Length: 111
Length: 117
Image 1 (spheres, helix red, strand yellow):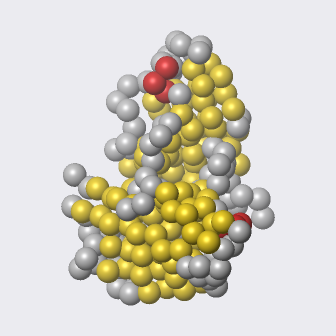
Image 2: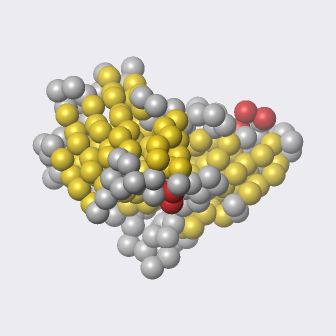
């Protein structure tokens, strides 16, 4: 039973480019969460999605960030016009209801 | 605002001893609390969940307590081993009317545990 799969594991972008982070939840999990871990900081919630619906986006920056979880395919976290401050590890978690199971993250570096 | 503190940034203990990690919270009434382990370069791995109406939970060498009056959880690893060395995170979350945990988790900063042989 494969765990939560995130890709790419490492992503390098130049300022102003777009970053697309993908998350395939565990089989049977319909709840997906995105968290961000900045250097020397703890995990911070960004967004909670169920298939085709955003349930809670209270942790998402108001601009440049968006997330989706389509009926088919992985969940996508999209960051437009990246800035240096977006450099972080982005973790996805999935759940059927109950404990959340995390992927190993995408480490985003902005040049 | 909600605040979660894990009292030790780092904890060093000798192999075989019991490690005790503390998680305190304020301005929050969580329905459940979870403990995770995180190794360098990896995502958090779920260890234990305890609900607000449970006082204690055990799993193998792990034990968690949850005191909603003190707003504190203690996480114990008995007979610790060097392989237990990692960062341990506590996380608080809400629940739904059915008692299942849903929704965002609020994490503490983590405690780095090092078990020396």
